[in-house]
Length: 521
Image (cartoon, rainbow, N blue to C red; front, side):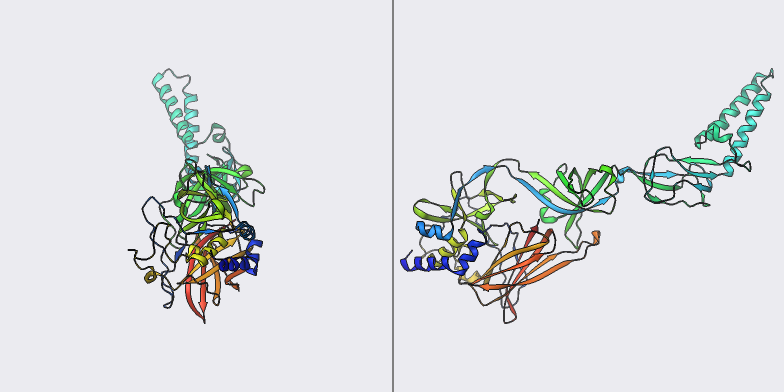
């Protein structure tokens, strides 16, 4: 670095941009499943992700040397990588459903007229063996008369010497009694009659639970086998949580799920994934996942909304770095290694799904490496200015120390470089739902030069969820230009996953669009 460039860097560190950047904290690297728009405006070529090399070795990146004073001014912090087994959390909205395996039908065992109902309301709780209705049945009345006549006939033949007649009379009584018992009529019911001498049959609940459907009314005629009530045992309920298709690979049967609800303040109940539905909602691109949970105090009722947190522990330990150490370009991810004598070297890495404040690194780092966890955004910017390396802005190819730019057989990169590129980050990371968050956007041209005269608009969209009767939610806000960066505060209306659309325009024409997703906590 020349003395002139160092002066530029130190002056920039004291400028409003660096003060604002250092004041809001270190750059927090965020895994953004970013994808460029398929159909941008005609003046802005499509920004497609780069195809990463399949070679296991990673080229040495450009380097930058800073003095101790410059390191202090930039707020650079360094940390050695470590091994850890991460726990991944996936947040989703869910709704309480009736447990289909715990539904029971309370049916009429005899046909007749319902003269009295003991269960009046949907939602009423019924005990097993509880009387639910009084039914007058002509068929039962006739069978009862037949049973009484058989009893009388057997009584008359007690003194007879005709053993066959006595046996036949006994068989007739047993057959008549068996017929009534199959209808669920006890001997006390047979001998009971109302004021008009008309016997009624009392129907009892064959199962307990909460009435979720009522099909009977007083005075109605029913046939044997007709369902009068449907009850559900709500001591255990089913949760159907909507998981985005991009997150489905992290969900598996038997996985632990934590359920929270406004109906259970300061309480978390745990269940397990029982079933993953085989089809996705074409509008929301979500897949319902069934979770069975206990229902303490029966406070979770069908139709209620809940929050589901899918917890997944990694199979083994891996190298991890703080999320702030990773610079996300939208096409690849960079970290800066801290070398001796104030040297910093860029390194492209591959990372897995983040957990809390850590990224698992699957390729690019080894134990003993020291990475920059704060001030790396400024190092990347200065490296780009001093060496032509684009770093975070994703432009020119990086060359190792033993490579030469002249006479290289590499194809011309300029032919495939889009007219402009966007980087995006939000603080805090993860952002907070129902609160204001600070958004940072950088727009650079094809040559890596910052674009400072654009109008930048951020739009957040949560797709509609018809199954939950939730309409689409959308909010937009503009960012102000500050020394080549675009910064501003914007409210994220609620927790959950939001689609992010960043548009940079000039004179009313969109020059580049950036798409990603964030999850507000």
